[in-house]
Image (cartoon, rainbow, N blue to C red; front, side, top):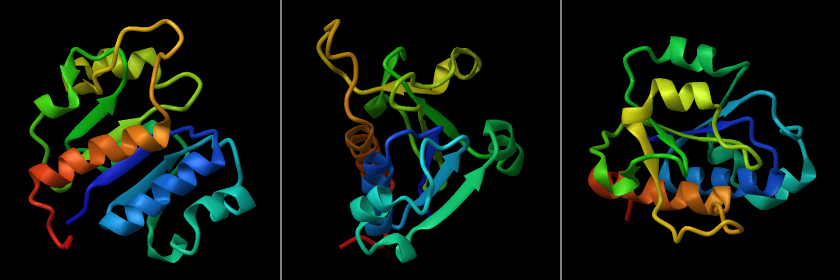
Length: 156
């Protein structure tokens, strides 16, 4: 039983390291979709995740199709600033996947279009310059809502 966090083509090592640390602290799985903007051995990535890497269940995929094929019956949610639903509007389960896009471009439009009803957003002021939150912060906000809804199982 674990929540699944998916990072689509992450680019910034400290973001992924911080997310890995959160996954370690919550028992969540981390799925990385290539291409990655760094090596998994990157010193900045390891520094951000500190000594938690051995506690993280990390899976790496060549593309989204590989992930979708492996988890055909899973419930997927897609985080984007372009969603109609707030992240708090959804009903999550303890094996769901929450997908986050790369820092500079988000998720591809095709993925968002095909999954519009399960796209979620974090509410923010409309601002041309402050278009989105930091990726690690966004993952934490949404992940803790999923954990809350599923009863904070195994967390103290």
